[in-house]
Each structure stands twice: as C-alpha cells, then as structure tokens.
Image: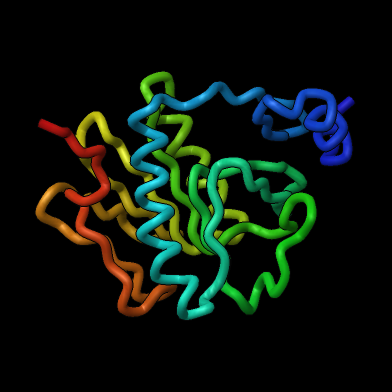
Length: 180
C-alpha cells in the first residue's frame, strides 16, 4: 500500500534527524550532502535571499523545507523560492504547491540523471525554473519547461528575469572559496 504525506510526517516525528522524501508512495531517506555541495547551496540561498527578502518578493528555503506536490509526492529541493502571492504565510508543515524555483546541488554521492529527473518532475508539476549546480565541474544547468537547457560556467551570470527581475549572480561566486 502506498504511503501518504501523513505517514511521512509521522516518520519524521519518530526520526527527526533524518531527511526524508515521499516519492510515488515510497519513503526515501536522504543522506547528508557533502560539505562542499552544502556550502554551495547555502551560498546560492544567501545570494537569493538577500535579494528577495528586502523586496518582499517571496520565500527562500533550504533542503529541510518540504513541498507536497500536486501528484502527492513530498519532496525537498536543496534551495527553493516561492513568489509571495502564492504563499502569503509560511505553513507549519509542508507547503502544498510546487516552488517557482527549485535548485539541486550535486553532492559526491548524487546521480546527475536522478537530479535531472527530479528537476523535470518539478517542472511538470508547476515549477517555472529548475537549476542544477555541479561543483565538481563548475557548471550550472538551467531548466524551463519546453525550452532548451541553458549551460552556464565561470565567467557567466545567472539571471531569472521571469521570476526575479534585476537579480543575478556570477557563477564563479557560487563555488566554495579556497583560503591561503
């Protein structure tokens, strides 16, 4: 019998230190990401939040914020953005919608195919933009439904004028710094 969001919530209460997703009625336990990938996700979220919050454009969350999607899956991107008019107040539990922007950062144990499939699933369920950040290759892939993938690398800038007019980030600024 497929599990439900309420089953996921009960499991999360029993195992609060475990990150879990509900995909096609099955619970997937998420392993911790690598240090570098989490640092990159945090940097992306910080850059985004620092633009969004003062302008009251919406909400930026990290990998612990779950979304109950229109197909009843409950998933959590590494970084997400929801426009203010779509989510006026933060829900106590999972947001029942697809975020406008979802971001995945590849960790050493992640499969690129699975991450790309997750992004495509979010796009099919209502997300406007999906971003895949790969610290290993220093490449950022930008996905939109029914459009070609945009590939960005050091020297390029990511902008999302359809969601965040005026916001942009240099790809080179996303990577973990090296200290002398």
